[in-house]
Image 1: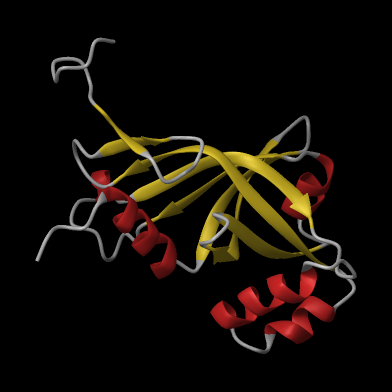
Image 2: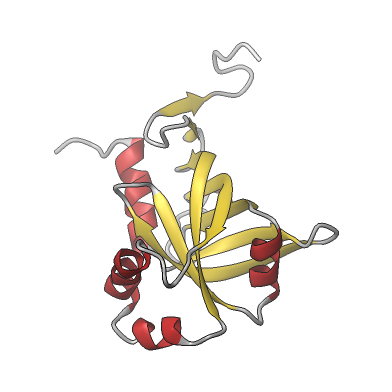
Length: 167
């Protein structure tokens, strides 16, 4: 049996996680928060359902630039300093609940979080945002850091000084 590739490990971490850490901004103040997410692997697109009352929802409506992170549960990691994690930079977009893509997105969300999500998504204050990564980094442990290319499938190993990198 061969070891999984870094891309396979990244997809596994995404599939094993239920929530992401969001970094949004009001334009004046940064905000760290979290939200449950769903993932469309074919399009490398993430979906979050958030209440219109939440500060991060207001920030996502105001500013499309976003950073978000998926990180290994610390109770499952070998070393807390080397938790597996993916950090993405990208853009967010509010999904129109009456639009042509909503039914498909709703199916993706319900497949991951259960059919009860249909009721939540129907609430007038709930919004669905698409998070589309444009770049990112993957850390799989000590000495296992990668930069994601634009296609989010090509990973380049990052090496620090003294390890062959000409920084």
